[in-house]
Length: 152
Image (cartoon, rainbow, N blue to C red; front, top):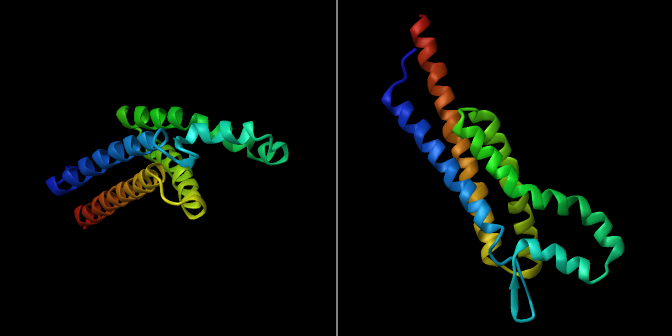
């Protein structure tokens, strides 16, 4: 089955948007997430700060999230690698989950601590991943529609 040019352009736009959104999510992890005193700390320092305050009970509940958070750059890289070797659905799923975690955390911290650049960029990243998902879904619908026309 031959793809039409609009489907190919939409598909390429979806791939490009997915790569850009992965980059935005990755960069957002190292931008400012909260301010303590005069210093603006990134998302990885957020966990070290909690540990230094000796909130043992709270930190014990927060430890799984800490491990997940430190694996986010690896999972984003894995998602991009899967897209590069043409495993688009799996790569998209990994990138969606990897961008959803910082975005939800960013929204919560935005409500508690005020807006920082890391929060904003992580939210933009998940919106871009979602938009790329809609472009892939539109490509899939276009393919289904053209296949239905070819059969009849």
